[in-house]
Image (cartoon, rainbow, N blue to C red; front, side, top):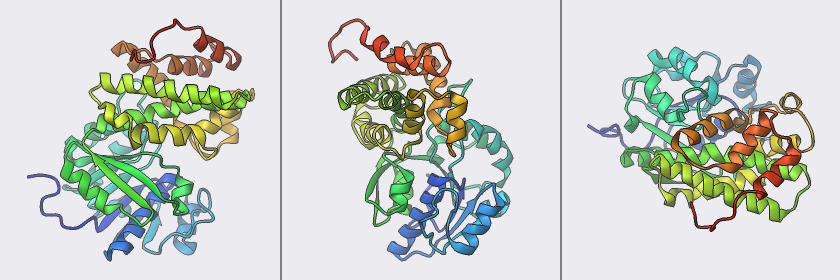
Amino acid sequence: MTPVQGRTGSAVSVAVLGAGSWGTTFAKILADAATASGVERRIRLWGRRPEVVEHINLNHRNPQYLADVKLPPSITASTDVAEVMAGAELVVLAVPAQSLRLQLREWKTLLEPDALVVSLMKGLELSTDARMSEVISEELDIPASRIAVVSGPNLAMEIAREEPTASVVACPDSAVAGWVARSCTAPYFRPYTTTDIVGVEIGGIVKNVIALAVGICEGKQMGDNTKASVITRGLAETSRLALALGGSAQTMAGLAGLGDLVATCSSPLSRNHTAGRLLGQGLTLDEVAEKMTQTAEGIKSGQAVHELAGKLGVDMPITAAVVAVLAGKLSVDQLGPLLLARELKSEGDY
C-alpha cells in the first residue's frame, strides 16, 4: 500500500514546525492553496517564542519575520508541539538543520502513524554528512516514500508578498510528490514534482555555500562578471556532487538547481548572500552572527559539504575556499586569486 492510498484531494490537517520566515510563509501557502481549491484546512504552526505565537493568534502576523504580511485566519500557533501535531496528516519541518536530529527524537512519538513529512530545510548535518531527508527517515523510523522535500527559488518574503514563484516537490514516490504538490498549489505558488530527492536536496544545500562566495565578492565590490563566474562554476561543482550521489543533471538545470542558485546568490533577501557580503566587508563570523536575526545555513553546512566531497573524490574548489575563509585559514582577499590560479582545463570537464 502506497502512502497516499486512501487519501483524496489534498491535506486537511497540517502541522508546521518552525515559525521562522520560511515556515510561516509555507503555512500561508498551504492556507491560500486550500482557499483557492475550496478545501477546509486546519493549519497549526509551532513556535518556540510565546510572544510570537501570541501575536500570530491575536493579530495574524509574525512580528519577527513577516511583520507586514497578514496571515490567513486558518493558521493558528502554539508553543505546545503535541497540540500542533495531534491529528496532522501532513507535518512540515522548518527548523535549523543542525538541531533537527535532537528535535525529532523528542517529536517521534507525536507523529501520526500514517502522516507524511515535508522538509523545507536546506542543510547537511555536521559529523554525519546526512541530508535532511535521511535524518528524518532515521530518527522517525519511516520510509523515504513518506518524506518529501520542497525546494527551489524560495525567498520567503517575496512569496509571502504573493509574488509568483515556482518550486519543486521531491519524493521517491511520485504519488506522494503529487499529493503534496496539490496541497501547496496556491495562486502565486506553482510546484513541479520529481522523484530525484538527492539532486533537489544537494542543489538546496550547496547553493548556500556558493551564495556565501558571491556575497564575499559583492562585499569586496567586485563586478557582475566575477559574480556570474562564481555562480556558473558553482553550479558545475554542485552538479558534480549531485551526480556522484546519484542525482540527475536535469535537476541541476531546473528550479532546485540553477533556479535556487541564481535567486540565493543574487538577492539581498538571501541570508547566505548577506552573510557573505558582510564577511567581504571585513566583519568576523561573530560580528556577522550579531547582525543577522536568522541562520545562514551555508556557514554551518559548508564544512559538511567539503567533507562529503572529499570522501567521494569530488572537486569543489569554491566550496573549499569558502570553508577555508570560514575557518580563518584564508582571508577574503585571497579567495579570488586562489580560484583564478587553478590549473587550466576545458569548461566541459565535470
